[in-house]
Length: 207
Image 1 (cartoon, one colour):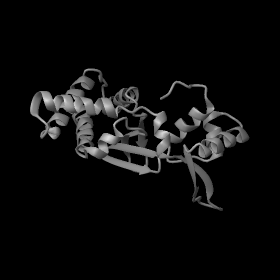
Image 2 (cartoon, one colour):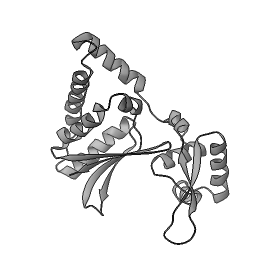
Image 3 (cartoon, one colour):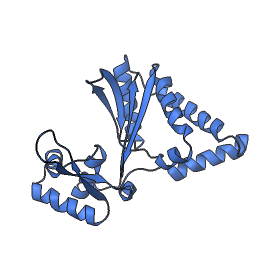
């Protein structure tokens, strides 16, 4: 993400990115700024086109106002679309030709899995998942390990995809991401993707 660690607007965008939308009060708890300070920043970000709002249902009482990212806000988060596409095209041209994108993508992900395996030394599944999440975090996926108590399942949840445009252009990438996790962790994985406005969430859950 852009280098602005102490910028409250960037902190707000980052916290919302790691969620499915947050209220001003929730942002106050996460960031530690005053209610009015957070509200003013959110209003400014909405005016600039980086946030929009909706009325989020609550268990009791009236729905509360919450903020979520717009597509425009993606410019603040890591994206490797151009480099990734260049790698695809270079590989296609060098090895197989323009008709074999699927084969090239498979080769890229197989090599990526081999590289990640050399850095993951966890003694058990949970530790391996934590290490994989940390490595994906380094690559800009905003990735974290999570235990889903409702389902009794271990998950790696990601709130950003540096190759999001590639995912749309080459749907096979979703299967290859799933296979990458299965290859590294040695278990069956379910991949579930959610996209609302400018928010992205992808859960890799142990089946």
